[in-house]
Image 1 (tube, rainbow, N blue to C red):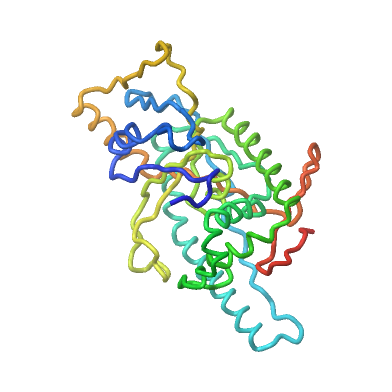
Image 2 (image 1 turned 180 degrees about the vertical axis):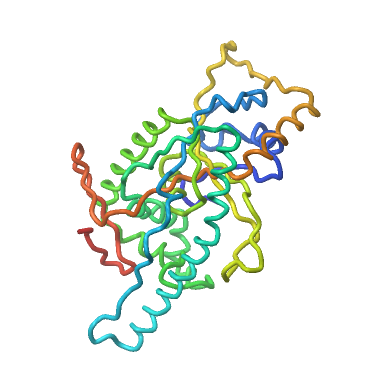
Length: 325
């Protein structure tokens, strides 16, 4: 089911790297029905000496977090406004508690990599307003489900809160066209700057946080999520999962560079299956703590690129929206 045509992607979920490779080998590439599918090559080499990889990590995401800022009561605050503020503060405190709990797994992942002899290179994601580009996603989703919205059947969906999909679909029809174009210009800058980042490193290790997910959705960089620990009974509630994860980011696959003649298919040079399994399992035991998703620092409320003059608009939950300042 389509959600965002320029961001949708498929990827395998499996218990091992070799299983993921087998599935991806079968499903990758265009099928002739989706003209947006890129004819990229897939050539996983299990014999690759991973010690040759340049491995970066998003330093700011592993640094101690800044103090949590809660919302203060406004003058003449109504009972409903007070209730909403207290709920938002409680949600922020719960999220911080879960993040602080999981931080031990993230730091252990870096310690494991260093113990393996990896020279971790500190890097940061481009300083762009990634959150302000989310309307690109919601506008595409609104288009995909526009029939649901225009017929009123969106009211049949269970969740109808301010941040739930039915309201996102409704608001998506009200984005100014000019600001949509500006957000796409900023997205182009993000793609270019992310490509420049991966000229310096081959892989980026990062916690599995939401901002890097937004960034890689927009730029098309692949992410690999691996378990790096098990949450105990002492984990803060709500414990969404018993498994903690780390993410590693990589570069998008390129068109095949093989020298095969036109119309031929290059077959991967797989080693014997027992050898492959032993190698991959040894590799997984060493790097099961990696995280692939790109994180980014907090977005400034207004972004102007000096070279291109790009300003990004972020709408409020109400239809009117507002310019960032």
